[in-house]
Image 1 (cartoon, one colour):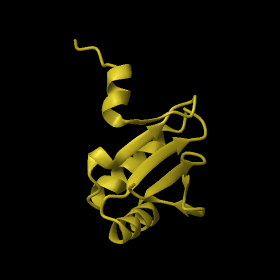
Image 2 (tube, helix red, strand yellow):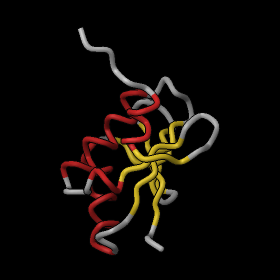
Image 3 (cartoon, one colour):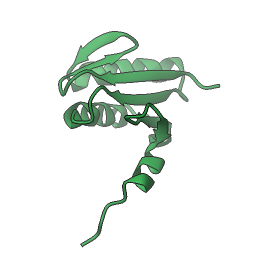
Length: 98
């Protein structure tokens, strides 16, 4: 089983990873990078405390991509606490094309 860490989105500016409260893209990127160094196959679960914290979710996604985390290793926790891949999230919420 792969290692799993959770990025708890406390608000648009504060993210907790492994119990550490972080603010800003650089701190988040450093924490994710450290997790990748410990386990290159680590799974990162993004858990917003409220669905309105889009900026905080964006910070985690941006930071994870900046340090080279594979998109396949990202997960999202839904409001009913189900952990799903971003592909599954996209399937559940398809965009409409103009």
